Length: 313
Image (cartoon, rainbow, N blue to C red):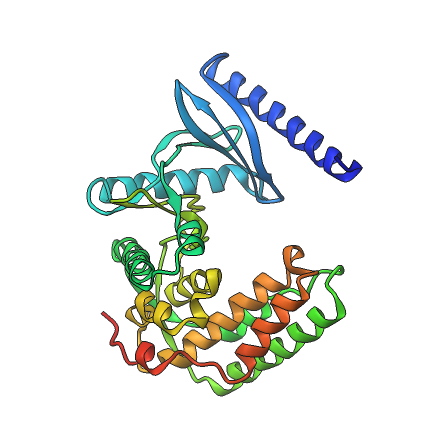
């Protein structure tokens, strides 16, 4: 083990010990046991463990207002559990919400992530079925509190941050070209109404679990509304769904369109999500992947006609 890996392992162990102490203080010794810390960053810490004899995840909010964030996330989970208690669309069960240490305890969901299933299968029918179910899950959740708002494309563009300092020169150059394309799209687009919904703050393939009968949403952050086409764009970046016409058709993002300009709005959403993802630390040195995807996008990519022609439902 390298010195850096050892340092990171020690940091995670220390973080887990701190959370264990907070759980003991809030619940009493013996009710909860923290296992491996899966991840931690400025926003949250997530760890596996056991609560009252059952497998769970502990999530401690770490943002600027962790108590507020924990309350919002707990309220959203309770709301979703009430309305999605039966049927094919489910959410991870909330076992407990501890306000003072800002910790949510959620039941572990058995199954495989959509990302893992898509990565392991090349069967077009299986992929189409699963992608269709993912789209239906988002539709079922968003329909609980539907709404429309103006896209605010310029404001969203202003929120994008420059690439991290460790990004390679080629990654920086590709991202600069992508940003210029996004600026051009904002100039060309008129006012656009888009459907919003407090469906999932991080709607990705890793956060949907398929158990063979139901699709479970996990790691739901909170209840703030977001453009549904942006959620679909983020989802479609995984496993190259956006580059496979048959996959994108099965995902059916046009169902979340609020107007006739679906193709232009979805292209902006995809480019925005692509920039947000590839400007981060995880892709700083993945020059081949980043440059290939951005070059393909900038070559004039638009949603295929079969995707764009599907009427919103």
